[in-house]
Image 1 (cartoon, each protein chain N blue to C red):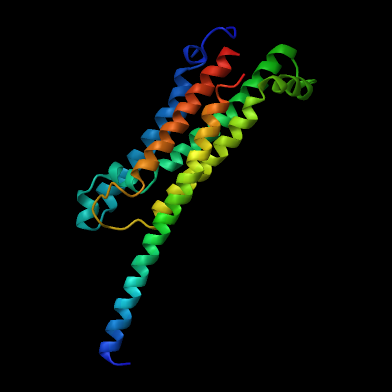
Image 2 (cartoon, each protein chain N blue to C red; image 1 turned 90 degrees about the horizontal axis):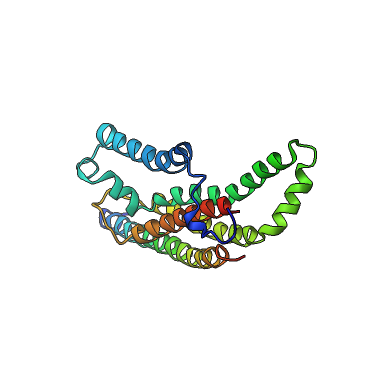
Length: 50
Length: 169
């Protein structure tokens, strides 16, 4: 593998790494958001139940 | 106390010890350690200059606070029942039957607890997601800051509500 190909490979890997990081971050945020909305709804309603 | 008393007014069980252990320490200790890390273990210029609390919030670390407060809110009604029945029976002989009798009148605890489990799940996703994807860039407030603050506030308000409500009986 020549130096050009190595550089290209490194650049690709970095790009994929950034996309993966972004997907992980957004995915965890999305799951958390859904769980938080469900949990908040149940808690707020139930805490006023008698 | 009776059922006419609004629960949010009945903070008769808010003792200094409760406030210290449940609210002050969980907020203050991580902050102290964050500042400790910033001043003694920071290696890069960004780590040295950026706000340690701000960085923790943007990376979702308030989620741990939310987990703790949610667990406390689930635990407290049951602990209160235990205290109550120990007081009422004067012994441990019939604790379990009396506990079951009392808990039948507190059905909302189970629904509330299941809701808190969802919030704990959300908080863990925010905390772990923020920790795993944390980097050395400057503070970016649009990461987990919003959810982080939201789940912590919801857990705190739920804990205060429950704490007041079990005092009201």
